[in-house]
Amino acid sequence: MSGVWVAVLVAGAGCYLLKLAGLSVPPRVLERPLVARVADLLPVALLAALIGVQVLGSGDRVVVDARLVGLAVAVVALCLRAPFIVVVLAAAGSAALVRLLF
Amino acid sequence: MSDASADPSHSSIVRDGIAVGVATGAYGVSFGALGVAAGLDVAQTCAMSLLLFTGASQFALVGVIASGGAPLSGALTALLLGSRNTLYGLRLAPLLAWSGWRRAVAAHLLIDESTAMSVSRNSTAAARAGFLSTGVSVFLLWNLATLGGALAGTALGDPRTYGLDAAVGGAFLALLWPRLDRTLNRVVAVLAAALALGLVPVTTAGVPVLAASLVALAAAVLARPATGARTGPPADDQSTSSR
Image 1 (cartoon, each protein chain N blue to C red):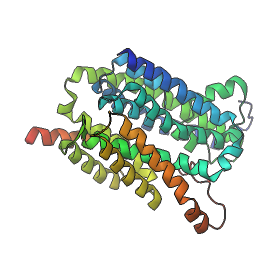
Image 2: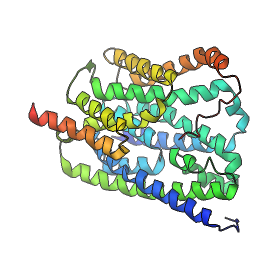
Image 3: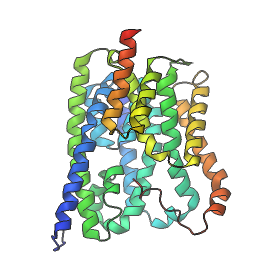
């Protein structure tokens, strides 16, 4: 588990330095349109990939199971403008229910 | 804080900041529970909230570890997601106008919520009030809630029984949702998810998510002429102010 500690410390130090860099670097960097666009699209691509892997990935296979029901319920909750915690609980609860019933 | 203008708007800014802090901090419970469900211990989960203190990066690191990826590829994903905080800082630096140790402390509180509650203010005093009230209250509650969620998660047993593995997907979707407001973003999201899933059978865990960042790079380069032609005036600076 020490690998996890290294990852936590590296990510912690890195995330802090990224924040500090933003407050310290001259704002001209942001004015480059390409930089702004990459920074805007990066979270979109990473979060979408994480969703795909979390919901359909299982080891080195792609499988459909109760998690996909949870994601579908999360979509409905978001369309209804539910707050974050409700979305998360709805996804968990619906997947748990599917596993209980089938 | 050297502002003598303790006008009503100042206290209402602080009140709004604390309200956002309570609402945001509360979902630290879900992070705490998911952290221990992914196999981290309580101390590691709490250390993440204390040290990373940026929600999407924390969920990403935990998610990669949960799916069997190398912890360091999880850390790299977390850093890529954390890069947006750099942009928030670029935007806020002239407004907050802190230097020295104050800037070093403020940097740790630089997250989605503290940016949203300060970037639209007109004065340094108001921006600082929004930034500090939001940042400090989110920090305190996020960390307390993480501890509570991690302890509760440890007591629960098999996380799959409660659908906690599905909760991670729901949490990522809730973080992604407000960013799907443009066609380009939706296309990038679909392509990134497809690329990642396509790589799942042929690479080690963690790599598919990192590879998806190439979709963002490619889209940013290729979309350049299109967006340049469409938007006449250079009103291209809305990347952070909308959230």
